[in-house]
Length: 184
Length: 207
Image (cartoon, rainbow over all chains, first blue to last red; front, side):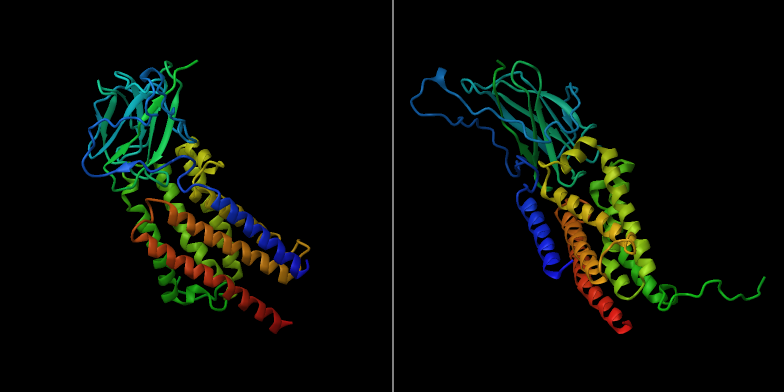
């Protein structure tokens, strides 16, 4: 092989690898960091909406599942009060149509902690009168390269949503709001 | 019983067995990332598969960084043996992650996966290619100089992306592990051109 051909080949391979790496997302597609620390917010923020529209016409952007959201999902997690202590997973659940907060809706969460992997630490939790779900767990640990949590809705009234999000190791809380679209 | 015998096989010139200090140093270098990785809290409550995956990866870190030194100092047989060993370590590492969670492993390797997993994928492909080049050296229709550049290039990719993968991975070699990884990356990446130069000079002298 001539030297210039070898040089060109290696330059092309290097460029291809560089492009593939730059094209990737650090934590995987859509896995934004939702970690928080400090005092927990309890006020319910108004959803983004257009001024002057009638309430009946309000629409909120439905939450989309992201790749990896269903990893280690086992349907029908048991309803549990907590999965330990030291870390909180919480969020508000609304309808896309009308942006109404949903009460009594079942959300499932799963994550890896010191007590086991994602298939061991799973729970169903229901939203309160203000549309908020909240469950305390042991802190998440990075069993698969990065501390991450899963939140899912899979009960049929609305379109299913499976979320994979990351947090930092020293975060105290993951906040994942869900906006669900009616099936149809 | 006490009769002394000449060894059946003469030791290699400069073999590590004759230099206990070097052997101790190498053992310490290999042990540092392994101890750090296995004592990290991310393995609390972890399955045997996850412990195996972490251990094999931590051993591979130091071995790939030391590979160019073996090649550059002419310890080719040992270099080949350890090259094959690294490949086995990496395959066990990946296999154990599959055993732990097939969905997480497949996701990591998919186009949607995180940057660190993509680095690992390219590093593994380069490692397989480097080992194949080594195994098929005599049978490939390549000039020695071309073979040497290809092998060195693949080695640099394995070291840069393999250790880059470890740097971006949380748990295992975080905190104290980061400077350790950077040191191994430096040893390995400086070792590749040094080994290339040493091997090329040796060939010229012989020719």
